[in-house]
Length: 206
Image (cartoon, rainbow, N blue to C red):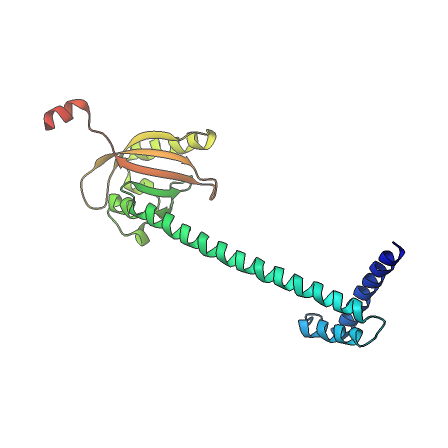
């Protein structure tokens, strides 16, 4: 038991001596603390019979720690690749969705929009971002959307209503809007889809 405590004390002392030597060797450049510095110190301690066994034990511990760091690095790299692949897949799904999807702020300014949403508004995405969606709505619908955003902000469920969309090119059409909070940006997620035709119009069309 006494020998175990003595061995532990020796290792602790060895760590302190090694740290002290490394600190002295890097005073000229505090950012410089390389593996080669540590190996020099270990080699110096291993040269003394009194500390050789402890120096080898410390070297083994450092090697094990290096292997652990390498394994962690591999795991992080694999996780990053998986996350990037999943992000690409989810982005592609959103972009190819047949429903207009977009993120807007409380002033209806567009921050993101998918291809279907851009087609609904009749403009290229790069021309739409930063513009208020209210620009493409009738005045009553713009007011209705702002009211919808206030309700979505205060509640925990999605809010819905019909809006009159006025694309830059094309005829005015009615779309069904679904709004929910976007916790990531602090804004809102908005989905626009073609509104179902009234029953009498559907019968007439048949």
